[in-house]
Figure 1 (cartoon, rainbow, N blue to C red):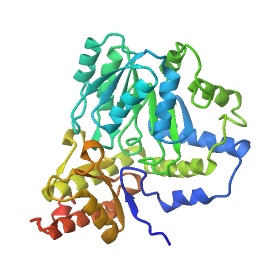
Figure 2: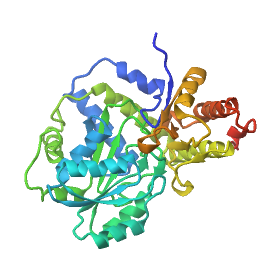
Figure 3: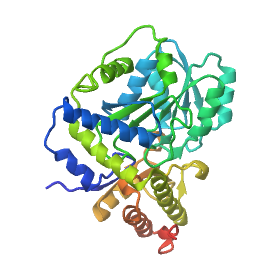
Length: 381
């Protein structure tokens, strides 16, 4: 029998048994009364979690799929947009924009350093004609949560549409799409929303719909938000999406978002903040450093710099063998220099993070480093 390791990577995350059980529910057709009920409940839950009264479209695929759909639907080749790069996935937004023939102006920060409103103002002053800004909220390569509210306000001063990749943030980090005047939100099911991978989502403001009127010609079918909107409106009572959908993924996502809403968004955000503080304080008490600046550390994950104290691959193997946990290795230039641990959704509790911290302390002590016994628990009240 295959051994299960608790997923402590920054996504996909460990899924609660109640959520996972819905993946083996009897299959339901992707049209008709029952499907419409599932679709509407999914959309309603996502609207509440994201903080929007606007349109939300669940999609089949990963968060990258949703980003593709957004680029395809909003822009014409040659449109000038601003992308914010302070990590692997910020860089990927630039790659994606260029793949669609856009004129991507890149604002860069070192890994671990968040963007500020002044970065938006400076980019806008130096690059006339920016139509939009696309940014990552929770950057899983660094553990940074960019200050989206502040950045969005700055971008709106220059008339830019605001597009936010919240794949690794929504569900744990505070996020208020409408209140923060955000035009497009992209997310996925497998991180802080607490469901299995397989679904992505795009939420669209009225301002973004208006911007789509400038598109020169439709491109694609399933990847065209205007076409998806057409089906959602004209076939709302029987088949609100043009293709076959993974119904059980929807039911699992309903359960996981029900859990978030029953707990309450404020309570959920507070729980994630408290657990993140326990992790970061424990890591620092063992003499290690966190990549993200504290003022912008994401509550859903922590990226730990190994420096010369341990080898990330060896530590990952140790945690699997001794604690039954799968922790993430670094990305990009930090692939052999960091450990990435996810503490979101079903992992945002002491039962999940305490064994991780104890395992890290034990591993360091076995390597001969002078770590005070119990230092890993310095963040506990």
